[in-house]
Image: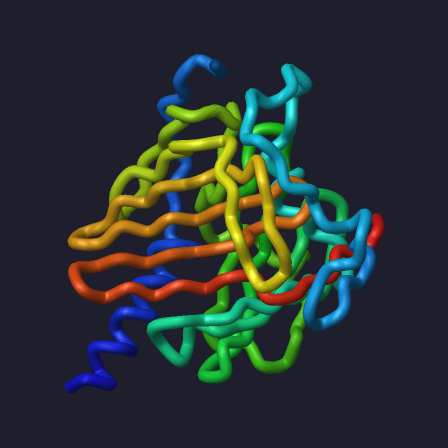
Length: 228
């Protein structure tokens, strides 16, 4: 029973936090080179900051979800064996990119579309072990992951509850370093809350799933962002 509960918790984590979002917004007014396994290289790692107001320059959601060929992110999990996983960008074409995710138990593939106002998942396959290029397949869904404006209060609905940007100046400590000025996203599910943190130019640096006494985290351990 204990193992079954752990598997269910991770299934919820993956399904709610990353793979099930619908595009229905309600916006509020706008207010590395390879780092090595232990630490990002200087200059590629974001410097710590005081969490002040962001620049008035318009920043696209895609800046917080970099998808260049060969880029990868390794996450260290706590609270469940499947919370440790690796993501890798396999293919990129025009405004689409395909990510492979391997958590040691299964390998999945997702195709994302990047526009000026959203990062949207348009296709997902839960069991994809062959690295098949899916970029030219017709979209099968319209699941918004990040949405403009990138300001506290921007909110949109998902099948599992609302998703909202609650902070744009969050600071997150990870094994890969300290990241300032992160977006903090809150996802309210049925009996659970998930927080995701995104850093511009890096991507997701932490994900935290909380349901009663269950707490599962995936924190950035190392990464590589290739140049375009």
